[in-house]
Length: 401
Image (spheres, rainbow, N blue to C red):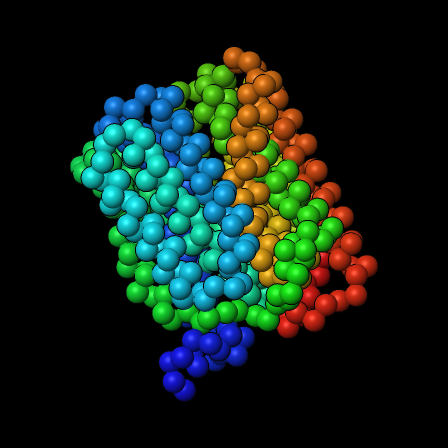
């Protein structure tokens, strides 16, 4: 088979070893693409410490990165099934690899911020492509579980090594941590096929606007409104209970680590129970975590609540992605959900800011609880709409709701 024909062969027509290699590259794209957002605290801390940015300037940089990532995820819906996967991976990773070293050469505030936003834009494109590749697996919930737990493991390792990296090599070391793996991964992009499973291409834009997919998008956004409120005010909530910043940081690390077995459980379980029962279970866990967070129950209760929350987050989000993938006839919705997550997180932080007061963060608890309940209800409605539709010929066995 010549190279041109090999590139044109869709993933479902490949040998098992080839599919495994493509899945591994997709997983690498997910981890590398999410790395900008996952080590954002390191970037903001480094910019404040090494470049002299004020807290407000660091916050603006964070907002620019988040907005650029969200916009890129929304745009990915337009190209992720039409542009060759190998080209898409090379462009996304190459752009990220180029923008980060360029930022090393400038220390002016706005040039640095815009280059970071550009790097985040390309990184989010790599993430969207990687998640689309994962969604084409034989049982997407398993793949999403692996992808989410791997992200959590990377985040823990990077945040653990980050302070030492900042101390030894400054902000340039953190930027190199982003750029070098992306540059190395560009060499893997030719191994990707031109496309994945067969999906509907005619009227793809309208397909993304079908009721089930739109409602699933609402569910995804509602969940991340709660997540954004929780993540933004986590440290302040701990301090309001008399905990030191170091204690809050230690418990936060434990909580993030608890997310890894959540993703692993989703991967091992797959679709055996369908998608909705695991989502309902994760909702119950998050409501328990919210109850533990309310009031002043001490550091141990705070830490246990965080561990339960992140376990449920990583477990449930795998099935949220699986449901989005199941109700979407275009194969593009998984790429777009990243935008729902970014903008939902930003909205959650802004919404909580309207209601919280010093030493009173009950509003965050309510936003988390209401957000997860609305999210699960929307996914249930989306699954019900899908069941009423005549099953479409998507080249895969429909996942159970």
